Length: 191
Image (cartoon, rainbow, N blue to C red):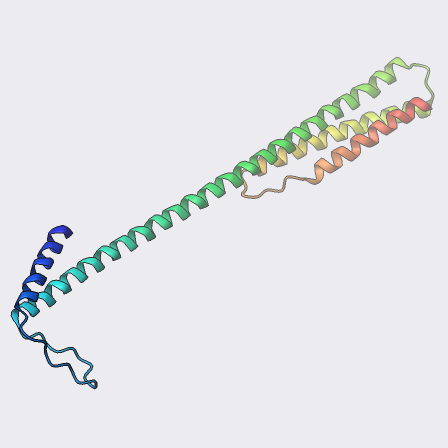
């Protein structure tokens, strides 16, 4: 709908109506709530054009309101998707950091197993207590290595879940057992 033409027609009709008005009408009594019915053809035409313009404006405003609501809902959906993507990415990064820490523990457990075995082989004339401490240290280091692998497998298997726990009990056990193995290896050197 071309509003410029409608407004020009409305302006022309209003000019014609103003030119044809003869005398002011009697005011309505104060108790009468209804507007008087238009008497002349020009007033009827003016009323109809006014109604058409008001209806067209209301329809345009309703369309704009619906469009704005649709855009607002699309923006809200995009914001929600962006937040979900960011949460998933942060979760993935945290899982990668935890897997890196567990790989470091597994490497330390492997070195912790190799070192007591080398000490056991190289120190042939050690006492029985020192030998037992080295054997216990190598067994504990193997336990640390195994629990680090189990923790890595659990984190990798739970990576598909929405919010899997990243700190598994196996990772804590792996660290504690590795520290015990290293402590026993150190004690064996003192014996």
